[in-house]
Image 1 (tube, helix red, strand yellow):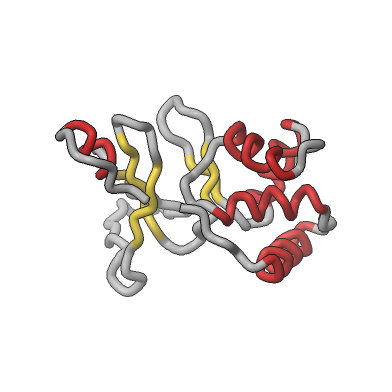
Image 2 (cartoon, rainbow, N blue to C red):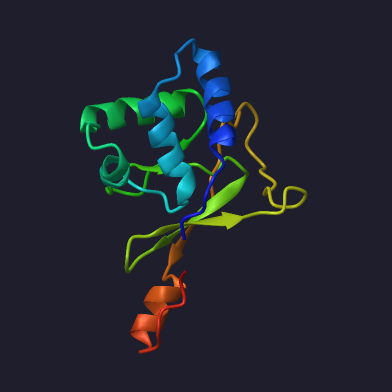
Length: 155
């Protein structure tokens, strides 16, 4: 479901992120970032392009790719890769994991309790973890409902 994100919030977060890398604020960057914040469904670059272009027709695919790369480098979004599928983009910067639906290829956030959500790793001596991610696979509620002949349960 799309949610309305206050433009002041978008501008402030974007300005802070761009300042870290010395890049400037542009209307295109603002629009693409805002598009990602409106719906947390892990869109591909092509999906971001289609959504953003609906309100900014002059937007090019190259601008979307460049902006997504910039937003990742600024720490405003994350890249989410899934097997051989297209790279997707996640605007949720809270600690969380991902659930991949085997039926519809949807990617869903699985929130964790910040106090107890991190697994305890026992790495062999000398190993340093720089990043970890727990991946869940299965079938989402909407696809389960379709399989069982019931109506949609996703909003």
